[in-house]
Image (cartoon, rainbow, N blue to C red; front, side, top):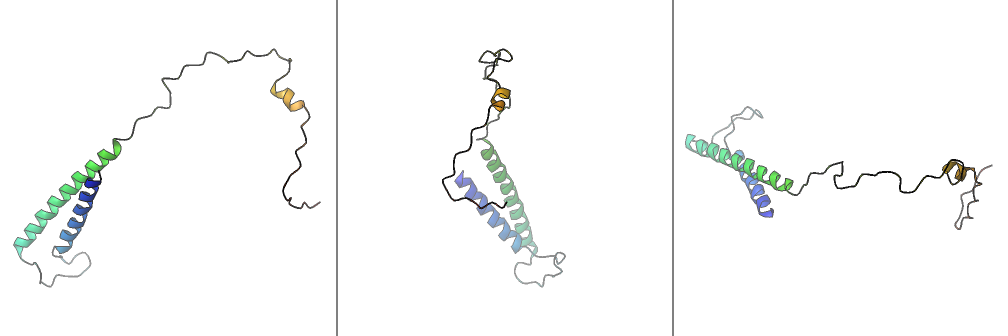
Length: 125
């Protein structure tokens, strides 16, 4: 996978270089071409073909990288098919009024909190 990433980055750099070598038509930035390096029609065709080939290879390497990235993913389900269904509560219910319920716990007096062992924040009264 690392080899494919390195190849992908090399394709990116090559494509940037080839695009930068092409002759400007003067429309994008308002800067026209004044001649000079690579102005003939033959080099323009070579650069155009090279750009197209590099773009196709870039597309294929991007596709291969995305496929390789998706291979490690496993589909998951919210509904667990292997978990046994619950038939009922594990412990039998106590009869009403026999104690031990949530309301009985709330009716019992609360135990006072333990004395703090660290420094306290002063309270305004």
